[in-house]
Length: 307
Image 1 (spheres, rainbow, N blue to C red):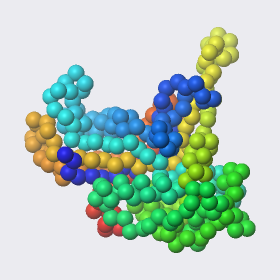
Image 2 (cartoon, rainbow, N blue to C red):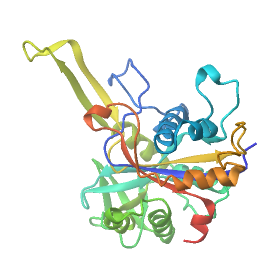
Image 3 (cartoon, rainbow, N blue to C red):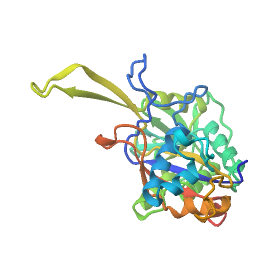
Image 4 (cartoon, rainbow, N blue to C red):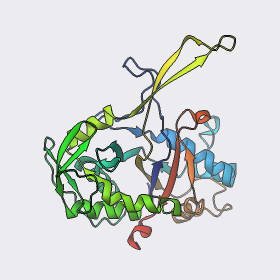
């Protein structure tokens, strides 16, 4: 049984392609999505593999196997004690008529995020404003800079701007507790309340399905420098400036050598994970063309309570 929890926030600095393989749709290589909501995710298995590789690089194979379990051929020896969940969408960037782009979310996403935070032992002091799924309105903070004539225009769709104290509270909380805290993100944290918008659920879902980045890729023939037969394809990516979150649950280590490594209980496991001071990770495919770089923030419940 899991005893402790933390939250891993992933801020996309480049487009991210966590793919599902081939598809019969208009995009050859789509990204991973939830079956019911259609919202983008990064599956837990992908995230676990990345975290395991990073722990092994920083701390060695013994620590990695204690935390995440031994390799497949030795899986019967013991289970791992760290369980990352799917990385779910929290903020999605959308082109805006003014302010360049907006960080968008919706009540469904916020309520699920709040539920998961509370289940993981976090303190959440904001409420999600009510907004009908087919509403023509969108909530923004009083200081919003994406409003033109009382209207928010995202891509080619317009919403009536509704200033909301709850929206500002959520944006401020995310800037403090979810956004990266390093110096290079100071301006982005300042921008968030000014470019934050809560859209109706249906509109947000449509944007996440129709406003992702679709990139054409080719492979050239060495001799002629022309496209090789069958070597033209399209890939879907989560855009830069997307924010994801993934709950991380831990239990008491089961590895025989856990005590020797100083991993005596779940608190020690959380300290070990926090002590890694993870900075940036590469998630998904296309590593050799600069895709999948995310800025990481590891947050424990006591970190939020002190903020």
